[in-house]
Length: 320
Image (cartoon, rainbow, N blue to C red; front, side, top):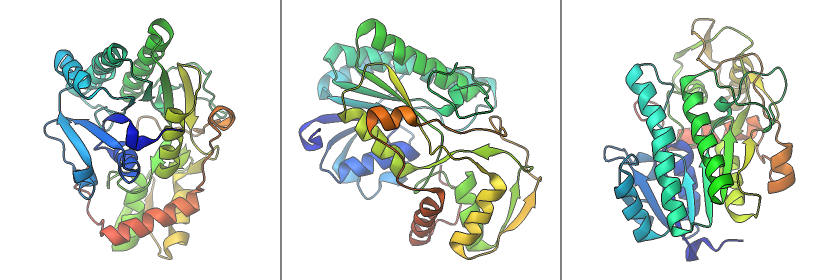
């Protein structure tokens, strides 16, 4: 097991949803944390642990600047989560996601190889896969149907290649639909929970679109196990629950958890680019090699997220 207080840890994307939850977990363990963020990044998710981390405002596309910074801090463990948020809608956004996915990942892999980092945890996505009518396995073909999925898939392929060709100790994680504290307030589950607070109307997609929702604390736990355990370099792991829910089923569960009725307009919202009638993870590999499985079911995760939103008074959708 890693004594996090004795190693230097570097996290890209540490101000984002999943990254901030990893940062907060490690900060409370006394870890020596270094974060790479873009100069314009809002650090609202880290406001109460800001004094426990060192923030480096570095452009990941600046290869030489990045390598200088990595040589200075010499991280033992690297968590790579950086990627523009959301699904690209314009040519500029598509090109930015590909630049970060390919060039930024390559720059960081080169820097990790130069200093001999002991573990490189690369965050991919379930969006890397094609559409299947059954639980998705890690051996399934990568055939993304969205621009974000394409950027994620190319980055994961690059990380796997560096593991195989250059011996970098890479582990690839592919989370499914992650939710929980500090998620972007305008995403699906925070929108439902906020509507339970305010009574606002929620526009849902047509029935039958399904997702495998995984609580963020379970993703954090899997991330730390991937860093601590000895697994073959280049291995990929799905992070999900093995259970999928329709949007209307999630809305009904939110009503049950909060005790408040929702005002729904079913069919009023167009589907998102990756929406499909079957989207669920096979997590047997993570069980077998990481000794991990999700601790929270959707009901318990929603309860924890609901309590957090009430405590934090999360009633607006302005923070991303």
